[in-house]
Image (cartoon, rainbow, N blue to C red; front, side):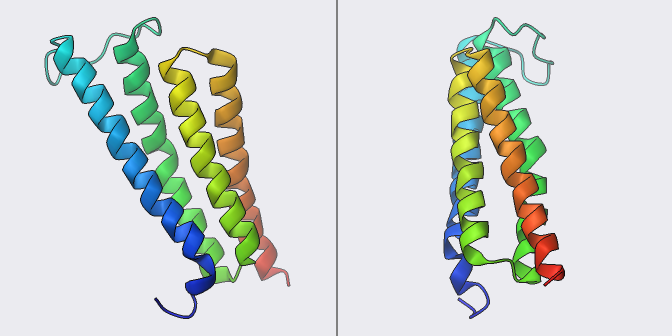
Length: 136
């Protein structure tokens, strides 16, 4: 690992673990769709009461945030953000994604929304830490 990346090893681990989490989410939605004999290529009915809808939204929401995660992490690393901040915020992102996933599957609306808010704040914090590195 290059010298630049050594302080950010935890963040790099979070990127890999996030990928693993998203693979699990993909498997869950696919297994549920297969068990419910949902036709491939047909949109999932917009019914938050169904586990198929909720599992589909979990995966879709993760896809909506992962691009932002990658961009702000790259920005922060190459800007020289303090590693403790970046590593802590990256772990917060991962934990909030796990919380969001579990709460969505279990239809816990308030906790799901709180988890998403924490996710958003962690992504914002990573961006701000990158910007702060430019102001030093």
